[in-house]
Length: 109
Image 1: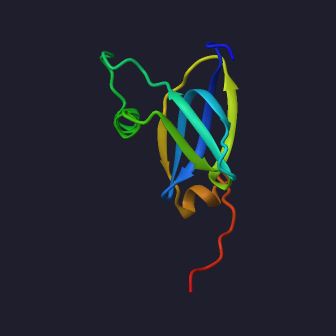
Image 2: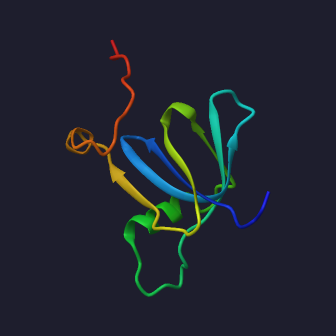
């Protein structure tokens, strides 16, 4: 696998949509999970700091490998350049605007 490959992974986590960049994405040995490894963030010494990207950087700082349930993955794209990692709140306005569609879950009794 080439070190030049870069993936944008978009998934739902606790009522938020995470958009992250990583060098390795593959199906896990654990059934129903996707593995995301080697997270890529902007330079820490950058003058302009994006608070959302800094939050993601600190959240995934000491994580070697993340297992995300397949049903929470929205999209995986192979990209040429890294964009800005971000968190988008998942609310009714966003979903009804057609930006994000989420699978229906059974109501909890």
